[in-house]
Image (cartoon, rainbow, N blue to C red):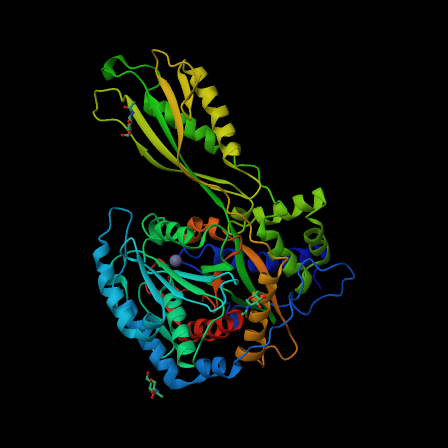
Length: 558
Ligand SMILES: *[C@@H]1O[C@H](CO)[C@@H](O)[C@H](O)[C@H]1NC(C)=O
Ligand SMILES: *[C@@H]1O[C@H](CO)[C@@H](O)[C@H](O)[C@H]1NC(C)=O
Ligand SMILES: *[C@@H]1O[C@H](CO)[C@@H](O)[C@H](O)[C@H]1NC(C)=O
Ligand SMILES: [Zn+2]
């Protein structure tokens, strides 16, 4: 028999791997692994079962299921062979048209062919919509509702993908759109031509069935999400703000991970309601030039190295504040999965009990996959300087990238880097300028100059105590419990939780349009979907979840 300690340890491990899975899902745009759907043989056994009885107010309530207006059509979409073949073919042909971009001035004219494909393949949808081409390649489709007092609901995806990498490494080539009977392969298969085509397909079928919305529905497709949305989403946002005004939308649902996760008979759906913040700091060390035979003790390269090295020596203090959506994810796990008792207690007390909060943070920190949910990160990603073996470098620059945790802000970072830079500047008798402000007058020995190059605060948190969230969660329950997996849910419920994205999506440009932004699409993201890597794919069934869910969800809210 294992000791109490062993049980506790094992329970924590199981819990951690579960958490790791949840977080990796959130990170899926940035890493190649995305184990959001565990295969049965990979399940961790013994720690997740039925909800435990608790007399307290639930921190993770179950939302009422919402009756679908046309459940038969969702069932048809999920199970009809002919529909599936057509759907797969539409996605496959979208993948066959390359739309990859990179950060270095991309050639956007390749999107013309993609537009032609969409307009031909989904002619019915384009005919029914008011079509706006924003900044040439951005697509906004407006399906005008009859009741203008209902706020329009927006759905988004992006047309671009990341580059294919080495085509030789792909089994079938990056633009094959190859279908092996289960999966569709190619760049963009799961990030996120599946969502873009899925949305169009659900609208196509709605129109076949005579769709006449009361609420206006908007589809918006940017074309440079993978390099910050500067030309696509940011222009679309301006366009929509002019057309509808600020805070004018019912909600925006963007790409994210596949919401459905299964683990040890417990099923969760998670939608991201928040994103971490972002800050690129530029550091410039200016020192007098000269011949290297009469070198100072520290060149500009040594100085900037010392600064970066000291900055890296300590992590930011981890922090788990109540608005961090990670807390809701944890609470849902604690309330519905059978985890070790003291851990469960800590999680359920973490929002008011400092000691519990600390222990939960420690648990998250112990796993490299979960620690970033409670940690502001710093990464020195670029350094430049020095020209010749015999010349002292006069201007050495570096860029330090940060992802800001909930509870921290720009000041957290500026205060800390300024403190360290002050120390280095004084030791070397140099000046210090931070954000154009002279803190120490530059000297003959030179100066350190720090400024923010690009910044984005932590995204506003989407509320989950209102009807919009309850409705979305309720639709997901109906969809998975009654329509998609009725056997699986015979005596089980789908727990819907909020979650976090540690990276940023196109929604960064849409904050002024609504307080209700969600990231995540129907379906599951399998263990090795190759997002941003080689052999990217989507399960055809998972793709159909998008079509089948949005068909009824859009019908219901409009
Ligand atoms: C769907 O496609 C498969 C091959 O991928 C084929 O075997 C099957 O007959 C097709 N079904 C229909 C109804 O067209
Ligand atoms: C339009 O929607 C509002 C808000 O739900 C509702 O009160 C009103 O009755 C609707 N108007 C029509 C004509 O349906
Ligand atoms: C230092 O180099 C950077 C990058 O090349 C440049 O942008 C900056 O203007 C230079 N600073 C000075 C003071 O020359
Ligand atoms: Zn994406």
